[in-house]
Image 1 (cartoon, rainbow, N blue to C red):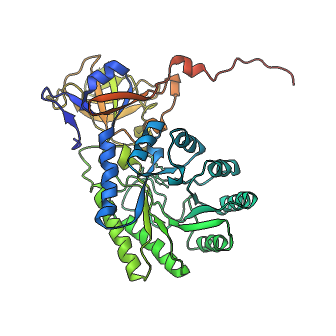
Image 2: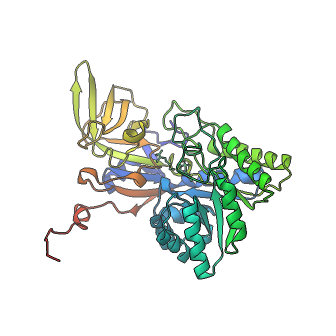
Amino acid sequence: MPDHLQVNDNDELLIGGILATDLAEKYNTPLYVYDVAVMRQQMRAFKQAFANTNQDGAVAYASKAFACQAMYQVVAEEGLHLDLVSTGEIYTAVTAGFPMDRVSYNGNNKSQADLAFALDQGVGTIIVDNFVELALLQDLLAERQQTQQIIFRVVPGVSAHTHDYIQTGQVDSKFGFDLESGQAKEAYEIAQADPYLDLLGLSAHIGSQIFEEDGFELAGQRLVELCQSWHFQPAVLDLGGGFGIAYTDEHQPRRPEDLVQALIESVQRQCAERGLACPAIWIEPGRSISGPAGYSLYTVGSRKDIPGVRNYLAVDGGMGDNIRPALYQAKYQAVLANQVHGQVAETVRLVGKYCESGDVLIDEQALPQTKPGDIIAVLNTGAYGYSMASRYNRNPVPTVVFAENGCSQVVVEGETLADLTSHDRAYQLVAN
Ligand SMILES: Cc1ncc(COP(=O)(O)O)c(C=O)c1O
Ligand SMILES: N[C@@H](CCCC[NH3+])C(=O)O
């Protein structure tokens, strides 16, 4: 069970100091609930890793993991930066009043309109991914006679090969400038020659849900070596995100802040050995900030017991609110909200209500005796749950609630049935 799990003397689950069963009753299920203090704690722990190593830098929350205006407000309050990947995320940040100079904009296919929007909104740093984007940006800046801070994303040629996770650092990747073929060097030369491009440095992101530091350290080393080979003193090295979290008791990862601290120390050493002044270091953690803080609350509904085969227990959500088990065979664990450590009565396959056999939330979950109406909490669902939600089967996207210090508040209204049809238009073919 996660260290931050709060359980009262009656063995009932609390989130942000509030009974999970009360939250379920008040806001209905399925429901996403975030324990805001857990997110603040992780943000502060990352900042502390920089303080411990006397290192300048920035922690940019990669909001693809979980984005909404309230989240951006918390990120701003904690003094973090934001790593954004779409005009939708930029728009959300602007409307949340986030300081746009603390925003970096990533992505492998930014259109001219996307880049113009980012410039209009005053995005602090654009992380340029490829030559097409670079040319579009050059034209826009020349037209506007405007200077822009940029960072080049490069592919460090590092496979997180001991892990079966989403990889982005290997040579065969759609992201970033290639090193071996000289693309990164060519981009560097273009930037040096363009008065409107203020090249801060380089970035690399090797993948997601990675536990060991070796891949990160190697990527950091490649960035430092590259700068040295170009005789380029960067102002920033951006080491990306991807720090893994424990989804179940099987995982015992190193704390993300410890991993980051080791990484910072490694870059400091690399720079010292190669005669570079250690630049500011940026990191882009997403999952490690929002993942452990999130709970998905569901109500138990039907069941099907197949003697000698297995017992299926169905809840009122599923792959629409959490696609990760179906997409990545991701593992989760769940508790019965009013008997967290209750005596195990059976092991069930926890399934949703979608018309797919693959709509499985947890393959095998030991639980106390349950009955319809009980509340089940799936743990650690705060990253890539709500942000990857769909309306499959025309099920509305659930409400998102923040809970902190015994108070709770809706931060994203759940969709209604009327919302589902609000963008539909009657079909009436007219000659044109
Ligand atoms: C460029 C970039 N930065 C940061 C992240 C955040 O990764 P994570 O949520 O694993 O920390 C991602 C996603 O993998 C990414 O593509
Ligand atoms: N969405 C993925 C991670 C991809 C990260 C985005 N670069 C997940 O849920 O694990």
